[in-house]
Image (cartoon, rainbow, N blue to C red):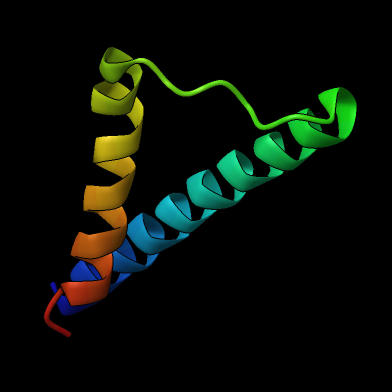
Length: 65
């Protein structure tokens, strides 16, 4: 049982880290291609994308181990 929990936490952390890295990479590509900052995300995109990513990272970091 504990192995499953540990594996789930590990995968959640890896998924959240991967999503964060992909977001940073997309921003860097945008800046290199257009020489300007990426446009600001609309509120609904932040709610659908950014909030779950932040919750996943925060939950994975503060998860009891």
